[in-house]
Image (cartoon, rainbow over all chains, first blue to last red; front, side, top):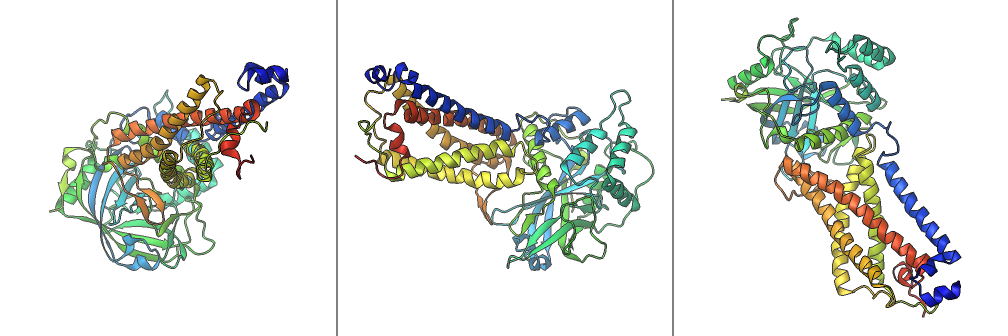
Length: 369
Length: 182
């Protein structure tokens, strides 16, 4: 056999058929198989139960039904532009250029939570304000906030499970109250969060609402010192509590009121950071920090123009909360990476779909004069 | 098989080859893993983007090096179809190693994502924001990545065939650390 192999040359079948050749072939098979199996494992193909960005977005689609071209959550919204005037106080806490004294242009989006792009406005619906700060030099800071002071869950699994519990029953078209009750019963942090959210009344509109980033972040100053923070936007409008009634006759009442208000003059929100102390949890968005924590006002966000979603404006921005400038870094909150991953998946899906016009249209276009 | 002496790749060629083999394999695993992971997503993206830029720089250096220091010829008695397969898989590999980082850069540009290199350093966008184009490029990036994984497995199997079965000196021409003894 070895003689045959030598006569036939190293590339013949006889060379492979040598005892050593067969062993070699088997070894190659094992190596290739191991690499392919490791690849499949990392890709999640061997673990269909793993909670992935795909599955989170799939669940949104199951809960809300298919709405191609729209965000899978916070689907109904309107764009704005304006600016942020930094008072320079933030520079003590973060080396980000956004916090140097001066003005940074901003764009952003007001929206209703939920994945229904044509849902009727309701004062009881959780609302969001997303902002993109664009300082000179190519950096960017994106933040997406909602008008409740704490989030209702603290882990990706709990987030997914409460989404499943809120799925409408095909028979009634409404979520099964028993499912949500069971979820809250098994998640004491959610019960506590609901209690805290219910303790203060909702505002009647977009303009008089305060918006909270919920997740903790880390500010890093010029010397590298790290400060745990949570930020929020506090409205300067007079607060009007939400009425008891449900949606009225105008399906876009909240958006129309916002546009009308900006048409009369610019709106302002104070950017406030809460300073965490050692021991304050940074990985739990459902737990508030003690109320005596110091607050620092970093400046004012001004909204002076509202326009409907269209090609190239806020419609095409993914308000990924981990698009951060130097000087702001993520905390250990697991919801941050989850949000970044799921937003990205939602963005990728809707990017390739035909985009119907938003429910919020002509009445929305207004500019503070 | 002391009679099987093949000319070697230059030390620079060998260094580039193995550095890139490690970088590309790591990048493929990071890429396929990050889109399937919620807790690891952000950290892996932060590695994936600068590593892609590094691979793009390395493959450019490698192409110039390859033109200046051509590969040693394959053994004369290697059958023509095998030689063709060796050359073709290298061409495909080079094309993909250029294409994947470039598609990644253009797709993130079209999506309007800042590409973080290190600290405040951002890679400038090379396309204006265009989400339809982003969707197309994003799908292309995935297809090319699976193609690269396949073309990575092919030369790996081939190299092992040379080392374990053909024993024709092709494997040590790239794999030996020092110079081959005459």
